[in-house]
Length: 132
Image (cartoon, rainbow, N blue to C red):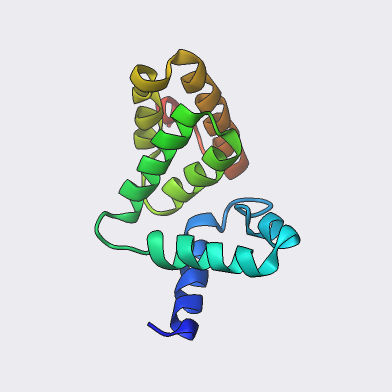
């Protein structure tokens, strides 16, 4: 794949995943510190890693939600909850993945992740899984 194809794949994947994230998923911030490195990171993450087809995009994003829940990374979790919903994960699946992390990260990180998830659902105008 040449540079132009990689650039286009990067843009397409980033749009698909993060188009609903107000303020973006991080690229604009990275770019303010180092535009060249930001471009390289974006092309790796969105153009190469997140565009792979070994697992579905929904599975990939549910993995990200699980990892970020246990790591207690609310900002990144917010972006990847949006992405999971954008690529077809259901609201119940996202909730279930978060709840399952109690065995790995404990209840405090699950509660924090559920707060983040609630904020995302409110931003999107979507009901909570048990409400609709």
